[in-house]
Length: 220
Image (cartoon, rainbow, N blue to C red):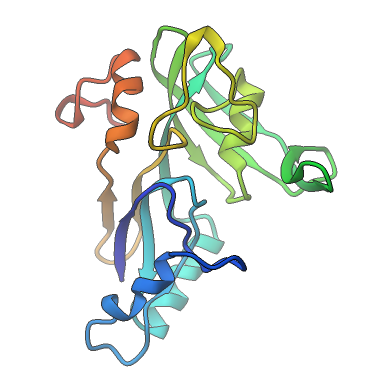
């Protein structure tokens, strides 16, 4: 298996309009294996951080089973415009896809949607921003982005789910302030990976109390 630190702005799969994607790099990552490595899960184009690939068919099947069963422990860091009503909690809000000719498609919270559950906690606050840790129990498209709006505000740099100049804040230069920070896979032995904080997120995190990766809070 491989765990990559995906940059924000790079799609995982090729889109109909063409352009660069991580699929372009699969031959480079093959490394003398018989087949190209394949993605065991997905990250949105605008999300940076830990992305896992299987290098063989048995490895890909094993990884796929872990993700499908919810046994892969995923931890995300995000910066939100706004203040959650508490310090931690479990948000249970089903999501469904909607589409209009004018605005295109997006996800919305709706009782008839697919189950979507996110554990969250506040890691820091400052200047109208909140540094959040997300631990999704499900993997719906744009789940964390929509759930953030239900907690109190959109993620910084999110143009789709309510990015606005609240309090004079401007979008993150590198895009969405969402990082797939850590991944833990209950294999034998256990495999773990931690992604560094992208430069584009660092200023916003510092305003919320982050002091660099040497002294960051860890999950219990």
